[in-house]
Every structure is written in structure tokens, then in C-alpha cells.
Length: 457
Image (tube, rainbow, N blue to C red):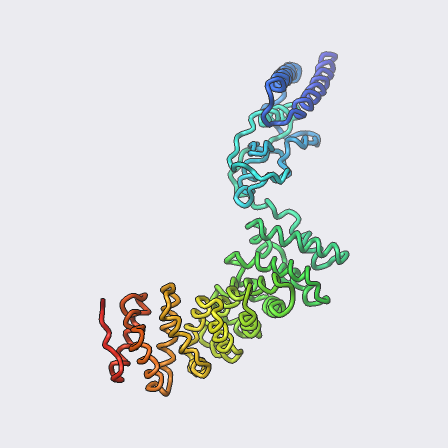
């Protein structure tokens, strides 16, 4: 009995000594050391190993398989990954010298080139096993009878999603305006940086889109809050499987439409970018087309500048649904596009959209009334990319094909061909589609008696 008590006392003493030497070792960290520090560190590790061996002698029932601890023990913070918040299974060192759980830092480095702890930009993205820390964790688990988790290849799904629901709660039910603004800004950053946050937000959080956008529909317009929430919505819309869920939420399209008209320049541009992202899905094009959104997007195109590309591309996607073309033309699309093309602004993007809607009879009449034909012929004469020439000749073809006064229009095209050989050149040098349209125009001119027959080069 006395021997048993003495052994227990010896075990307690040895564990106390081990924890003391462990603290000394951890104070050196796990990175590279100079020669003197390395010598001291190795001596400390040797002492820790000696204590382990002594403990095994006085407490032989100590199991190297780490049975569950009978009492709760506090894991040293140095043994926990700052990303996973758990004891490390495979500790590795990254370029900054910091140590992390392998699975978690691998996921982090897919999205960032910085150290999570120091925010230092990393010189490289490789990492090496931290054998020292791994050995120390093994020894600590042995001494404290702590069951260290086994290695796992499971995909890290919890990384970066911690606290996202809390941020959403602070936005939808704020304790103060300042706290709401801070949470909205942080959520914008998180959804931009991390792909799994974007997926988690929509698929795992209850009613997340409504909770995100409700503040924009119930409070006076706060421009910074609006910008952060709309930008967050854009970040979420990048994920393919989020697009339908977002577009079908009844708050989304009205609030995006509102934000196209008012807000910061970034808010308005990101509203257009979000609609462009959502309109990649066929079913969403009907939802967006059945709103006032087309008119607001066309207004952005008319303003030009930063908004043009996103707004024009969104309208293009929406108008691939034929029934939306009438709505776009009724909303003033043709005069806006024509004026911008005459100004020489974003010609390539706008010609693509104009070619799409040039099959519409009302659209063609408006183009003719606005004298667009002369601008198109001017574009065709000048060197340009094949796509620009292709779209221009498609519009010219449709303006002639759908014009009741085809003979009058052919006279204009005949003069162009006789003076510049525009369509003959295009029939020889254009894209396949441009060649087909140019050849058709040349045949019209020949039948009309004013042009040359098409000749293949």
C-alpha cells in the first residue's frame, strides 16, 4: 500500500516536472533556431524523454494508445491549430514560421497567400511537417492520458464558417447601427475570400438571403450598408447552385433594381454584376425579365462608364429569351445603344447586344429611323476584331431583310459596295457567320442590278 502511494506521488512529481520542461520547450517555438538555441532545445527535449521513461516505470499502466482521459485536461494553446481550434493531428510549418493543422492550412492556402496569424504575405505556399511539435503533442498526450484524434482525410468544411451565422444575426437584428455596419462589412470580406463560406451561407443557414437583405427594405437607405450587402449578394451569386435560390427569393430582384438606380457607384455596378451572374441560368432570365430591372439596366448603359459592360452583358443574357426582347425594346434599348455606338463608346459590347435584338421588327424600324446604318457601314470599313465586324454585318443584314423599303436600303448598300468593296472584302476575310451574311447581301445587290456577284478568295 505504501509502495502504491509512493508511486502515485512519484508520478505526480514527474508529471509536474514534465509540464515545466514542456513550457520551456514551447517557449522556443517550432521554427528555425540559431545554433545556441538549438542546443538548449535539444537538451530540454532529452530531459522530457527521460521524464517520460521514468513515468512509465512508476506508472506502468500508462497506455501509449492514449485512452480517454478520466478527467478534463486543458490542452496547451500551442498544441491547438488557430484555424481549427483543436489539438493538431498533423502539425506543419508554413513560410511565416507558424504551425497549423495540415488539412486546415491546405484549405486556407487555396484562397489566401497570407499567414492566418500574422497576415504576412507568404514567400511560397509549401509547408513541412513540424516534427518537434508533433513529438511534444505525443508526449503530452501520453503523460496526461489524453486521446489524440487519429489522422483524417475528411474535407475541411467548418473552416471559415465559424461565426457566419452570428454576423448574419447582427445584420438582421442589430444591437446598434454601428454594430450592424461592422458585421455587414465583415460578411462582405468573408464571402469574397472563402468559397466554402459562399456555399455554407446559402445551403446551411436558415432563410439567409431574406435575413441578409431585409435591412435594405425596412430602414432608411444607408449607403455603406447597402454597398456591403449588395456586394455580399454578388459574392454569393458566383456559386452555381446558389443562383436559382437567390433569384427566386422575392426580395432579391426588387432590391437589386432599386440599387441599380441609387447608391454608391460600387453598389450600382455590383447590382448589375449580380444580375449578370444570376442571368446565367435560363429560368432566372424569365424572373428578371418580368420586372422593372430591364429598364434600370438600360438606364445604366445610357450612363456609360463603369456600368456599361456588366449592364449590357446582363441585358444580353436576359434577351436571349425572345419574349424579353419586346420588353427591352419597349424600355428604350434601341435609342440608348444607338447613341452610345454613335459616340464610339463600348462599341464591341453594344453591337453584340444590338445584333441579338435586331431580329425584332420594331427594333429594326427604330434603328432605321435613327440612321444607324451609316454608323454600321463606317465600322465595317475600318480594321476591327472579327466579332465586331460580324455583329455589324448581322445588323446590316437584318435592317435590310426586315425593311419594307428594301430597295431603298439596297441602294445605300450598293453605293457602299461600289465605293469601298465593303461586303466583298468581308465575304473573303470575315468569320463564317460574317461571310454568310456578306454573301447574302451581295446576292441581293446582284439581283437588284447594282452590285457584284460574290467571289470566293
